[in-house]
Length: 334
Ligand SMILES: [Mg+2]
Image 1: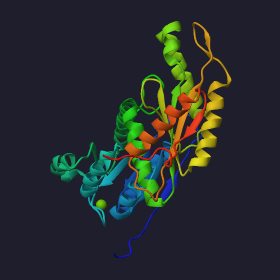
Image 2: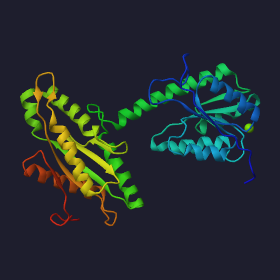
Image 3: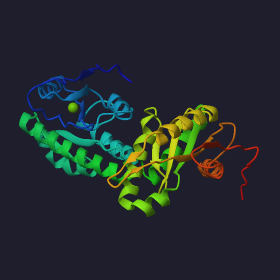
Image 4: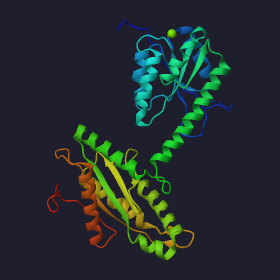
């Protein structure tokens, strides 16, 4: 590839008194990628974005843009010039849409010269959300970004609702299982174990029967908080069933997982849970297993192992942790 003049600007202005387009008060701030090979346009648009306190990067070619868009924590709003060296804007649009099937959404605005308006349908068909005529008018640019931000917020709320449990706000069953699949694949790739803790509230039916479902719900909500309060940022917690929870600890072997499960169990049972009708003493039993990169275990195997260990914990009098042992409980595959 010919040596392309590279421009890379990263700007973040967070402290400002005036209202900004980029301020949401939430985690879903707009992060913009500007792809424009004209230095004049790039500088001009960059100056507007900077003035509005928006977080942006600017590149002058499609190849670099594509590599940025695939990175973790990639920008979520792209301003794409139609004709740029490397991967062209329209092709980037198609690639962005193909990338989006894993659930992330990149709001895409095509920048186009006034005499190319006939190409807009092509851009929309390729997956562009909007377009903007060049030279860019600042009010129009700001309006496009506001709309983009609204769509991104909406998309994030929908995604949260689709992947989280309504009551406890932990990952829902489908999402924690999808996470386990991803973590197991990563574990095999990196040759590191991933631990699975299955936790079940002891005598939950009694709580529901004696205090009512509202108290039962309060218990589950508080328990979910306690279960995840001691997790590392990359650990995952989900509601597996009614009063059953799954914790995934990447890069964690069985012995460490056992120790951590015991710490979490202690934390869960330490204080009574305060509900509207009563203070409820709550404990949990836990079954622990860990993947072994040397063995070809599936997610079904790991779930079965954790479940069997949990069963042993219940049999041992509850409020305790048991580990799965392949020696005493070999997996039978049919
Ligand atoms: Mg151009």
